[in-house]
Length: 155
Image 1 (tube, rainbow, N blue to C red):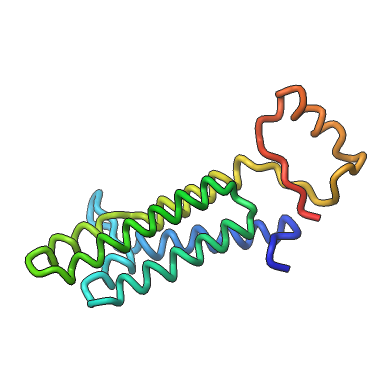
Image 2: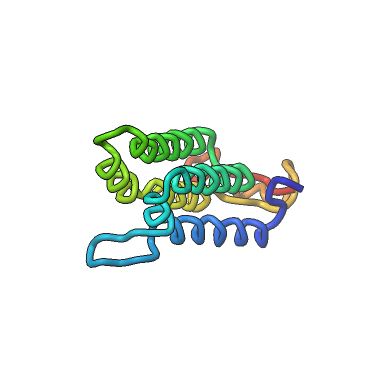
C-alpha cells in the first residue's frame, strides 16, 4: 500500500508535492522575492530547522511512493540537508541573521518539489503487470528508442 497503485494515487502524490513546495517557499510574494512558511519559521530558533526536515522527509516519501529515480531522491536529500545546515547557522554568534536570511532565501523545498514533478513527467506509468500484451506497442517503442520516458508498472 506504500507505493502508488493507480493514476489516482499519482495525481494525489503530485498535488501533495506541489502543495508542500508552494507552502514552504511561495506564500509571500514581494516582487521577485518569494518567501514561504519555511522562511518565516526560520527566524524562530529550531522551528525552521524542524519544519525543513519534516517537509523534506515528506517530499522524499512522496518521491519514493511515485517511484522517482534514486538519483532524484538523493539530490533532494542533499538539497534539504544543505538548507537545514544553513538554517542552523543562527546558532553561531555573529552569523545568525545572515544565516537566517540565507536559509529563508534558499528555496530547497520548491526546487525539490519541482524535481519530483519532473521525474513524474519523465515516467510513463502503466497500470497492470509486466508482460501484459496491451503494453506491447509501448515496450516496442522503448526498445526502438521512440519512447524516451522511464516505464513503471503500477500493478
